[in-house]
Image (cartoon, rainbow over all chains, first blue to last red; front, side, top):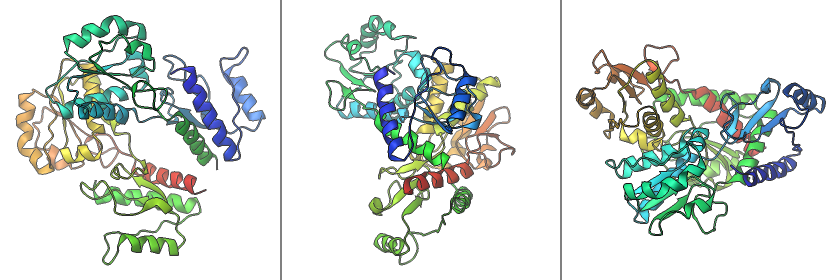
Length: 224
Length: 224
């Protein structure tokens, strides 16, 4: 996830909070001199009872913070160690839909390229949608997904993987369109997170604004 | 889903509705002389603005009813043709967890037995969790799931499938424990929907009460 995604989340959440008669303030646990106990104290003093948790950086899956006295909603799937309410895209459904649309367009040998780190962060839900769609459409196909640990490992592996498995389409998890440029021109390209609904790349537009607003609605429902 | 599940949903939803200052009444579209227009009229006259939709029978995925003037929440995944808010178990996560627990107990060749009709109804989310967990734990294993169309086709196929793939454990989607009795005794058995948390069969207990209450909370949040 990039900074742009976080901004859309925050903007949509702040707008909805205002509509519902609340105010959304931002606090960074990573700020200088900030500690978990200090943040709790700050929230308590200000009479803040509800907390939205932004997506955590990198591979972080838990937050060193005692949520017990607050109503909490996590944006996206990143907080998974502490069992809190979370609001996120239906990644399984999105990947399944992308595969099915490729099939409908006539593509037959469809691969999935995703970094292992992103896949873990989404609890492998994108991967699962791809696997189910493939099993349904073509039970004998078992194209291994291209899943190196990090992004920069994808471009050098991409074309070998495409030709080895004679792919005619690739579903990318990446937001980063430049990486898709490495693929040969006859291969269909789809992204599971296009930045705009009608941009140059075909794919799924995640609804960050809807998620931000939904997170506030859920939090307000918990608080009232 | 059986009638017991529906009762737990309803009871939990009714209790929560009362707690929140609302009342839950039951209307059956299948009642004699009931028609969609008549039900709309009935709800309108009684000043009812919010509707919970119980799981639909059989393979039904849509309801002949104009939801546009009501706040609506569907229980479970069965209403999928009309895009309404729904509240359901995280079936993907449950199946993945069941597989991982089998691995942790030492089982290695783990199969999934589920009727195709139930799988479709859950948008293949149980299947997807199984597929991802298997790909992660044993990328070279590709044990085909036992997926006949209906329940009664499972028992005659079960033991042949178990021995053909040398399974040491089977994950059943079924609620119906009697069917599991057909498996040979050395095979570990897990159910994805055990009726009680500490019954005779190992498996996942779905939280019907939590879902019923959560559906009411979501509906109340939409109404207020």
